[in-house]
Amino acid sequence: MSNGASGAARVSACLGFDFDAISLWIGSMGSTSPSMLSRGEFGAVAVPRILDLLERYQARATFCVPGHSVYAYPDLVRRIRDAGHELGHHGWVHENPQKFDRDGERRNLERGFEAFDKVAGVRPRGYRSPAWDFSEHTIDLLLEFGFDYDSSCMGSDAYPYYLRQGDRASATEPYVFGEPVELVEIPVTWGLDDFPPFEFVWGMNSGLTSPSDIEEIWRGDFDYAYQHCPGSVYALTMHPQVIGRGHRMLMLERLLEHISGHDGVEFETIGAYVDRWRADNPLDRWKGEHPEYAASGTRGAG
Ligand SMILES: [Zn+2]
Image 1 (cartoon, rainbow, N blue to C red):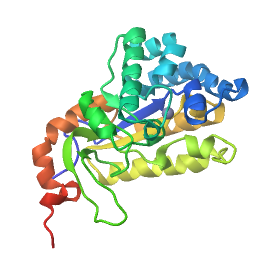
Image 2: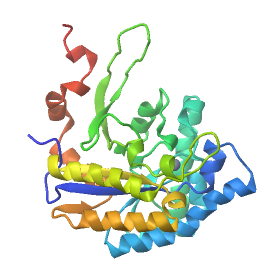
Image 3: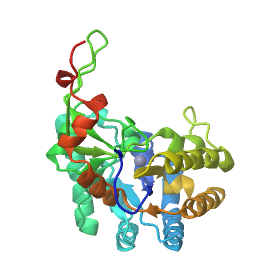
């Protein structure tokens, strides 16, 4: 039994670019300082060079964009779409869903969809939470809006899983595992994200790590997946305003060269991988094969 997706690819390399631009500095950092916001503007400078690099490797990638940034850079969003990449939902203004009530969170999701519809005529199938945070309502809302997948959680690494609805966490009572639902999770990890190691933020990130250090980590996870995890997904999370600097672009190019030198590896969008994985791992069968993700009621009380 494999946990992965059948088909040609031994490992699917899903390159993710969160094109947060200015919204990151407004929504997550609470700033309106022109200097601070200009760090996000650099993302728009970097997107074309990333698109050129992807074209050279004939790699299809997934760009997650907050609605606020979709409106700020409509031409770039259409250019990403026209190059065959996937566009993913990334909130309204890079807000943390935990800071909103259910209706506020729903409105942020609606505004993200509205921006993609008006600017690019697309409806994203996947969601990536800004800052990878969920509220207690997020999974309910993702189901309500009909998302196929999410990519914000960390309950696995090389293989996807189905998210649960109705988990209850308490420090005084045993954990309650809810019921797995039709929402595929493509797991992420801070170790495969460029923002913490590279982006300097006062009081938060020391940043400015040497790219060779990060290249070793990123290569290591790819090599392990290739050697041990057939049908798996290797999901990187990058930000144009971070990875787009010269020394990091050279590192990314070396990494793509390394990955593409392996037989049976495909660069594809998260959505394409999810379609294949879901067809190979229907929820009902998957639940039987993965008791570690099961609802409390089906675990047996020892
Ligand atoms: Zn983001």
